[in-house]
Amino acid sequence: MYANNPTIKFQICLPFVAMADKKDIFLVSFGKHLKEIREGKKVRSGKSISLRKLEQLSNVDFSQIHKIEIGQSAPSLTTLNSLATGLDITLAELVTFNVER
Image 1 (cartoon, rainbow, N blue to C red):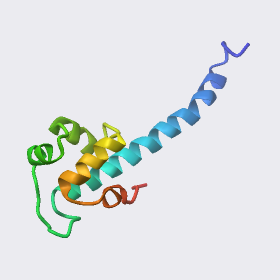
Image 2 (spheres, rainbow, N blue to C red; image 1 turned 90 degrees about the vertical axis):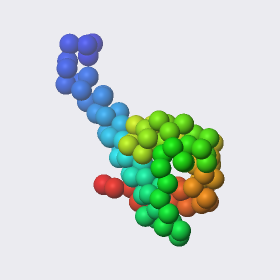
Image 3 (cartoon, rainbow, N blue to C red; image 1 turned 180 degrees about the vertical axis):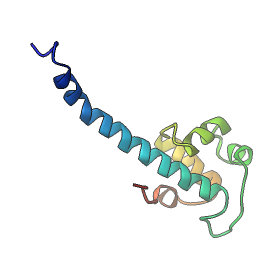
């Protein structure tokens, strides 16, 4: 019945596009936050560590860390915990950030 009406198809897809955009904004914001922590901008020590060093400290592959930092990957809770341990911060500190709008 609606197959020949492109307007209806487009309207049905709109909420999914909006959700994808919000998810992307969230992932990019978290990635920037993680990178700032890794670079020492948001931690008490102020020490910067490389992706390779964080890989060693957290047991999370450096390419996965990079994907998280650029907002291309959504980390699992286990990965978040490993990153927090490697960064020597609490999980709460890692996941407390502002989402850019």
